[in-house]
Image (cartoon, rainbow, N blue to C red; front, side, top):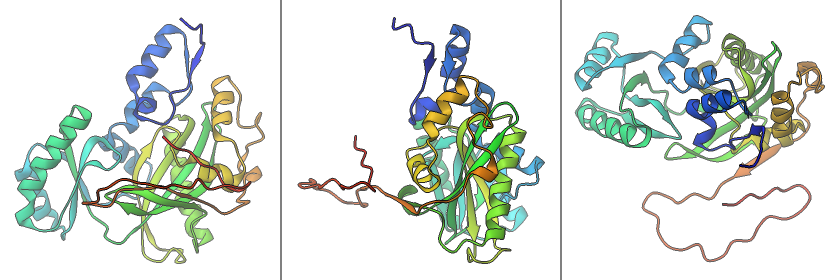
Length: 303
């Protein structure tokens, strides 16, 4: 109807839709995002975990074959995993279809709840189980690839401040992060990008156990979000790179070299922070007054 030759899906769940990417391809319309194969791969957390293992990217102990709560119980006993453990939807995201289990007595109920929530939200109640790293820092690496062999990272964002698994405060760079640990984490992110023949923008998420200043702190791969995220502006400001513009140009055939975005040309130039308003558990009432931030150093988005 409009004659559009390309579609940018935004940063909602449509941006991770394998079906939309496939239909665009069949219609001869450019999907401004990853190849449909990458969407399929990273949309399945078990497949993504397998890719990480094959490429020597560290992961937590876990079980990817859980037909029922009894199988989860058997795995925990076999591996002698300490509580807490976490149940996750294989096709989940955004903190939905996820439950932390802190004792044996909770396992059956949490498994049932998690399965039901995953089936309702994602149309598939399949779960997997992992070791749960308590009090870990949550870092995510912004990546950009051109689908022609070129890939870079735009450093990390610290999104450890969360409410009900939803990010509330996010900033870049992570404070006090050892340069050696940063290289290990960003290097791991790029391993996955290259191994998946990725194109466009994406985010690779990690948990870090221990002090960020410790170059040998344990870090593990969580998941990859194969899309531009709400928080991409944090990295844009920190590195002074327009990620959406880069996505559009890459979709048009440009390489990272064409865009002047080789790794040694990307650096941290600013400190950037994003804050979101979030209702607390059990909270209620009406937000009666809200003053938008103002000034040349602020960016406000509502909706």
